[in-house]
Length: 183
Image 1 (cartoon, rainbow, N blue to C red):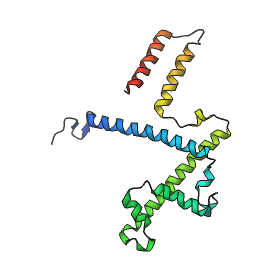
Image 2: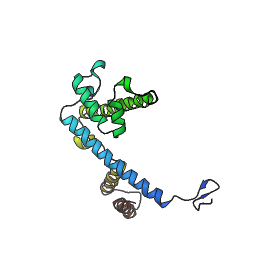
Image 3: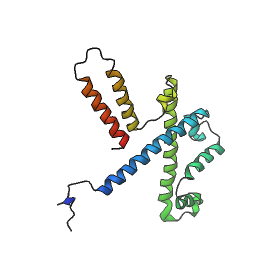
Image 4: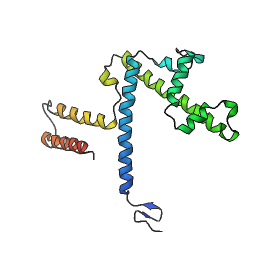
């Protein structure tokens, strides 16, 4: 079967469906980053610190009950079939599903560690005296947009430029317009 975008196993063009799906994926990632940043900011404002998200058995500053509640919060976002498997007593888990259960338990620990590390980064930035604006996680697109704005501001302060400022400004404004359109 010949496909117009693939010839002899070589991709000749990116399908429109792939571009659309990638755009949706990136939009979801941007939303996730913003929500994760807001979540970490909320935890920090509630005086929750990174040491409070590790097991009390390994020195975490959390009660056993609160630790179980934290795990339940994480598991609450898993699909129903995974929640059901994790809710089963260990001895009741069928032999063929024990590996899956172990992977799910590792997934809980991984998510807890991700949260702990994000809070730790937040704490380190706070200790350096950085304000909330610099602490909040920004997407790559937000960083680029801010950089373009900064470039426009800086070029206006140049006393003896060695390049065509008007052309530079036109290109920066064109780049900003592209970003606004989402291209």
